[in-house]
Image 1 (cartoon, one colour):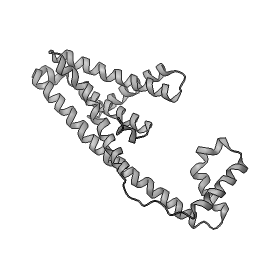
Image 2 (cartoon, one colour):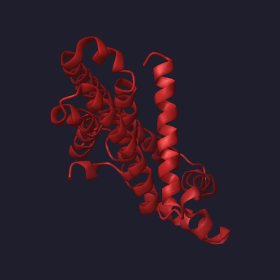
Image 3 (cartoon, helix red, strand yellow):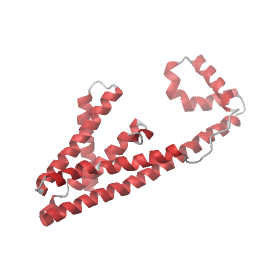
Length: 219
């Protein structure tokens, strides 16, 4: 989906894990509700999942927009600092703090200094981008909201297919845990990690731990 591509892979992964953990915190504690209310309880559970995921999706979208504004403000402050630098050495130090993690291992110290000097001279002649939201920012916010909301769909599907609400609940939990494993395994493969299955089990364990914390704290 082109909308989801508005987010970088790390953000997409974080949104999906967050949504799955939040959904599991509902479904893993729902047996009491189903025991007392049966099918009516299953409907209440689905409404609660979708309502909560939608609410947190909207919040996540808002936080994404806020993050974009903050990042543009940070870049503007860097540009102002470069413009106000007393000399090239001070400008190089500012760019070194900003870029060393990205280019530090690929260049020799003299090459880095030359790059930062040239880049600093160029940046001082440019005007910074205005601090405002763009169309892509709004697409990213909508994608954040959608990804969190989307994680409630696998949780709800078994309740539409299976007549026994308890079987549907266990199936729902299994699907969500399987998705956590799948996210870890696929992410490891895309990043070139040597042991994708191990990463899948790590995601599964980490997600289960977060669910346990959420349940213990009443979330």
